[in-house]
Length: 503
Image: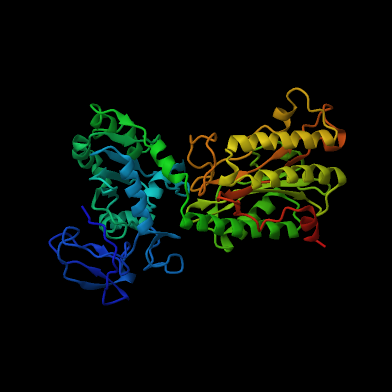
C-alpha cells in the first residue's frame, strides 16, 4: 500500500521519463509525478534510473508528456489532477465499512454492426475514480484503515503489439501503476483470478453490475462462457449497490470540475450566439455548425445527440431526427452542448429562423424567459429550495403568464403545455447522479439545469396564434451560497440581443 505523502519529487532530466531497474518489472514514471509526491520505501522498491524518451512511450489516452497541449503537469485528464482523483478514492473508502471493497467496471466497446464500433465513452463512475479512459478495465478500492486510507487495484488490458497495430495504443499494466497511481495492477482477462482473493478477504462488497453483451461485461453479469463469473465469486456474499455512495460524492462539484463545466458552457454559449448570427435553411446544417463550433472552440465533442427542431418539430421534447427544413416565420428550438474533460454543458435556446420574432412568438418567449430568470435566481443555497420546489415555482409562474396571454389553464392544461421537470443535475453525465432525489435542498457545489418550456399543440383548445409553437430556454447553473453561477451566459437569450445579431 502506498503511503500517500505529497512533497515535490525532483527528477534530474525534465525531458525524459525514467524506467526502474528495481526487482519489480520496469514501470513508467511520470517526470512530473502524478501526485507530485515522494516515493517511500513502502511505496516502491529502490530504483536505478535509466533514461527513456517520452516520445518512445505510447499510452491509450493523452498524458502530459505526450500531449502538453491538452494537459497540464500533474493532470490525469483535462483539468483534473492525480491529487483530486486520489481524494475521490479516499472519500469513497472513508464511506465504506471496515475491510470492505468497492468494485467498479469500465465500459466496454459497443458495436454498431459487425466490427464497426461506436466512439468509446467511459463509464462515468469509473472515470470519476480513476481517470482511466480505456475499455475492459476494473478498479477495486479496498478500504485499508481509518481516515480514508485504501489500496487501489486497477486491472487493465496488457500491452499487445498486434492488437495495438489495429486499435491504437494501450496504456497497459505498467502505466496503471505509474501514470494512474494504482497500488496493484493486473491483466483484466484474468479477473476471476485477481478478484477472488479480494472478495474472499472483504467484509462487504459494493458494486453495480453492468449490462452488456461483451465477454467483459458477461463476466460481471454471471454469463461468462469460460471463467467463473462475478456472481459465482460473490455467491456467498451479498453485493450491495455502489451507486448511492458515488452519487453522494459526485453530486458536489470541486472547483476543478466547475471550471471544466464553465469552459464547456462558455465555448458552447459562444457557438449558439454565432449560430444565431447566421441564416440556416436545414436543421442538419445548423446542427453541423454547432458541433464544429463546439470542437473548434476547445470542447472535445458534443455532449449528447442534439435537438434541432424547426417549427412544429419543437413540440417533441426529444426530437433528434434533425432532417427537416427551417422556414422563415417559424422558430427553431436547439438543445445542444459541448463536453470538456468529460464534463458536459446543457443549453437550450429558441430563436426565429428569420432573425425577428413575430408578436405572438415574442409574447410567449418573454413569458417563459421571465419565469426562467426567476427560477435561475433560486439556484442558491440561501434560498433553501430543492429542484422540486423550484419546479413548483416555475409551474406557477408559467400558469399565471399563460393566463395573461389568453390560455385556458383549467384541467390538465399545465401537464399538456409543460410536461417535463424544470431541471436535473449535471456533471459527467447530462442527467448526472441518476437516482439522486430532487427533493433535497440545493447545496453549494451542486450543478443543475433550469429549463422551462411551453409546447402548444395544434388544436382548438389553445389560442390560434400560439398553436404549433414550442419554446424552451435552458441554462446550466452551479449552486453557490448567495447567488447562482450561470455556466452558459455567453448564449444570448434576451429578445433585443437575439434580434440585434442580424442587424
